[in-house]
Image 1 (cartoon, rainbow, N blue to C red):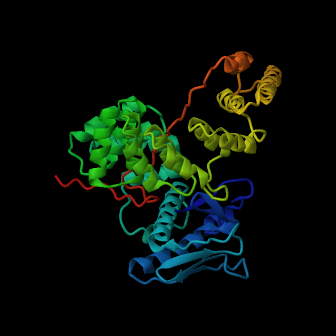
Image 2: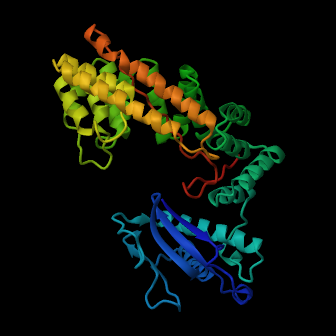
Length: 446
């Protein structure tokens, strides 16, 4: 994914009325690739860049794929280049933060440029700037697209208001679905989202999107059979990762562990959390040997590597205490360890005959909590941290200390701390008309 962002306001920008009147205002531009900052240019003629991109986009739309080179009178060398390599583009700049190892598709770059032009053009009209980009926007921009553009520009209130207006005045699969998405993702109001999505169903939608969200809502409400029905309906339209991932979680909660493991396997990366989901599913399916084999080849060098304490926890559940201990030790002093893991690690040590070390671990964890308690008592209050927040935190720490203070004796008396593993649902984008994710607007074929 590729995304442009820009700023036209700031102390270092546009203080000259002459520049405003004559089309020379400057701005800051950033490019993100797969969510990571790739490029930034400060105080450049932002409209000049947009016009050059617009001309390039016109050529692409007419079927002429060619390189793009942004050259400015203010700089001796090109600032930004899109270079064709086969049927894809390599993006480079003398100001880039890192070198892209993967090429970007024509569609990815085209959509990013189009969205940038739409967003900037909206802003130029808003400030009544002498230059506009209307000629490069070949079709009327729908109100739905305007709402999405506002959302992309972090103008949340205006975007939300427009989504609500569209759903009220022009109720349809698209308007109701997109407003439901805003309630689900941004307002965190599952009930209101569900009400809107039930209205969508009355239109007999031919899309996975409303069913994906309804399935997610039912999953989060632990209504697993209903979640399964909605998610399978979504998959019947299109096999998308969020729906498949969530239906795997539903299988797990319904005790269909082999089915869950199979789907997690399909979407897992090397030694990532999804792969661990597969392993845990196999444990619950009593496929212990296969689960252990997968853990034994866990790759610490993987870009997707899941932490060793999580691996240790599963090893312990398999009764492989020596392997569990080795994994626990790798990260034990690296960051805060929750009481749950203290219980699991010290149980492992007890099984290995290391009772003194287990007691030392417990005592050290209690001391850490006491220090945290004292620090919290001295914390400064502000708009983000109130007296009520502090009291809640102090109660939490006190309860954690109580859990650990009696733990050693419990372990010696045969206490076995239960295995807890949480599966996290997959959300994603289900907005009709989202150019960032190449989602077309919904066409009602009734």
